[in-house]
Length: 236
Length: 293
Image (cartoon, rainbow over all chains, first blue to last red; front, side):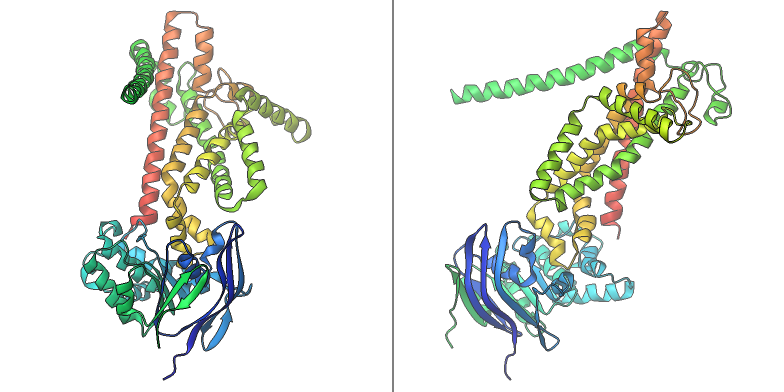
């Protein structure tokens, strides 16, 4: 079974204040795989991920060259086209940040938040999607009896799984994870690793990681970003 | 040497704090000692029966009640003018305005903050005269004109505190909702504003205090010594700060001076009540927006 390409990046260069961070990168990411991006700090790994959901556009004095195409509905879409709706893109490409950032609301409202943003009003549907998302994030059993509790009352590992669940609520096709386990202890990290492997058949995952052994354990492809260029480290 | 400097610095800070606290206690204490015995029903309602006065059935002629109502009405009206505009401008400055335009607007708002209140009062008076001459001869300095002028006075504080509270939110908080598909407006409304409510509330409290105490503006735009409870927003009105001013400059016996102290205490109580209302509203808003399951 051939792995279809999900993301195609062509000639990508990125500039912060005219300082070149990414240098003419051309790369493709296959569907339903975990790709890990490793490399020294401050080289642009997070920037590379933000290219895929256009989150860098709120940062001032930045510039991008090149094209990015993502396959949705059996067709490649140019996501930087003026006609492609930004909120739509971000519902299909979810992102989880390094430091867990639950909103100051109850656990339930946190997970339901993306649905509220998307205008979903059906309470039954929302409740169903919240449960599915929490189950996919391996958090349902731990919180099902206290969904109304403040999200800040959860432990660090649980908060990160909450953020993953929240990113999964709208069933994105791509999930971007920026060092998802760096602020967690080993056991919390291993739960998240297991959950990422579990998500592979639903999503294409891209993660930034500093932990090479973690990367060896779970990633299908490993790429290193240094000096603005991407090198494929997987030998096959 | 460093340790000595540290101790001196700490000691100096303590002294400053004590001086400040001490001053507040002295002022409030002085007012209370002189005025508390004068506060009674007669001072507020004069010869009129309190129930009739409270239900606006009969006018009060020799009590503080009309001034109390006038102050409440003035503060309520001016804050309701200033808050929506100040909030919107603050959001615009923090979220939408960029580059040299932002610098220009910042300069303008700083200039606005620095305008003396008497000048704002003169401006309000000129607007009233202009409207009287060219719009309708029924327009006079009144509660409405005063409220607009006071709104003008407190607008820079509201804009500044809103802008700063929004700008102080971390990048992590700002990116959470957009990463989940929120539009810019959704991010502002559902995440950024609820997080900045503390800062915005302090701006509103500052404005309330300013509107309640300012005398220069209201002297030129509609406050009078005796008018009774304001009949409409386009009528003259009484206010406590003005009462305190003219009674302390023109009192004829000790009793009148003591009533000035009493009026000052009542003004402080009104401000305290308005502050508590703001805190309560902020608390309910935060709860409703966020925690309600």
